[in-house]
Image (cartoon, rainbow, N blue to C red; front, side, top):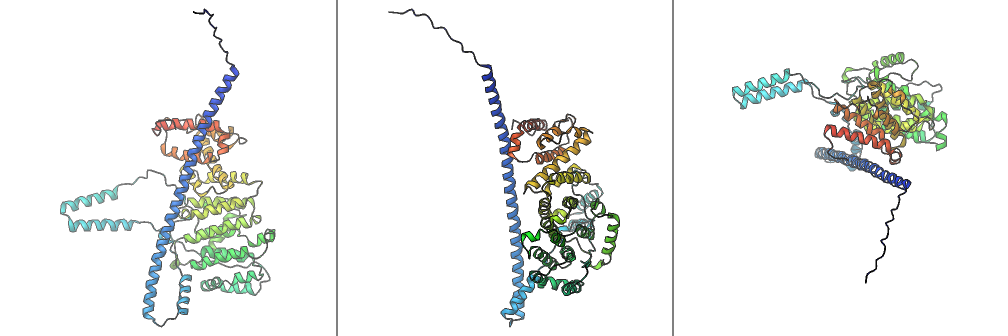
Length: 533
């Protein structure tokens, strides 16, 4: 039995256009979120790898230090054994006294970091090679080696990459003057007279700082005059005996920390009494034979006449027999002390003075010798940034970044200014970004004059970077004949400018994704990417 039922008509459900559009937008938004998250994950992974590399580097340095310490200890033990053989009746008190003296007389050797090969070394090497050929090889082989050496000597060596260091100091040995204690105050007491007398000779300075008398005076309520702080700072930087210099650094920190409460130490007159003057810092740089061009736009009222006067004073104690390399360890201690001075006694400095100090520290980091104390420079810069006023520090850092780009014009050098700024605080983080943004702006302005005027500073940094990057006549959009070395430099600046703030990258995800797409195309054009990252 069959039933002939009518077929049920199909009901076609009409889709809601708004609902479809919402689904598309949600799908697109989800895809963008996934893509942005991928970028953030890669940046996070790279940060973790950088931290791991830094940790391994620190472990390696510590291992090298421990090995060197063990070697020195072994040598000291060997020397002690020799002394014991020669003086078998030495008692324990004498041995302890000798140990204290040996610790006090520990030596520092900065020269090994500054020594470079010279032409005489090359000539000696060539002569040794010829002598070896004469002994072990036949006449034909000797002639071939002589010809090869002659050709090598006559061949002009062309550097393939630009040297990124920018000199801050003149090269060679220095005739560094001795520290001077100059009293400019009336009513000198007995302690000040004793300081003046003992500071006149190297042995007197060494004894005074070794005994720690100034620390004891300060604990008992002695008001250390401002000129004594300047003198201690000079001893840290200029003293020939590095142990005395280190004792001066310890004394300086002790005088800064004792006595008085936190409220008392913030009083303006105490800041003025204890801070290291910019003129003192500048006089030491000149004593280190800094290039006058590196110190332009100084804070002094008449820089040219002041510099000439300082150079004349430095010449008073010049002695050719005591010429030496620039003392790297003392340079680092001096920079460390200056940074703490700005942080502790920021009320004593003007905004212009702090900007000037930061700029000089950045320039120092590009010098071959200054780069050896990069860690101290990084900490000092962060301390200086902490000393800036809360209401104006962003504007101050923009001014410093602009000054740096005026002095360091090569992009291959500009990118290395980023090395001296560690991202250990929000201010140093911002400073590193603003240096990179300013460098990118200057480069674009050279390529497309006047284009930077149309970039609004009221928008976020990422949006500013997006405008710089997307300029159709700029470096990144003209890929016909791209300089790959310059591309590496610009991308390093771009990475520093965008930075690592996840919230900011998510907020400005659209400009970030557009930059990422263009970078992908650049990568494909030079063969670095085979698939979408």
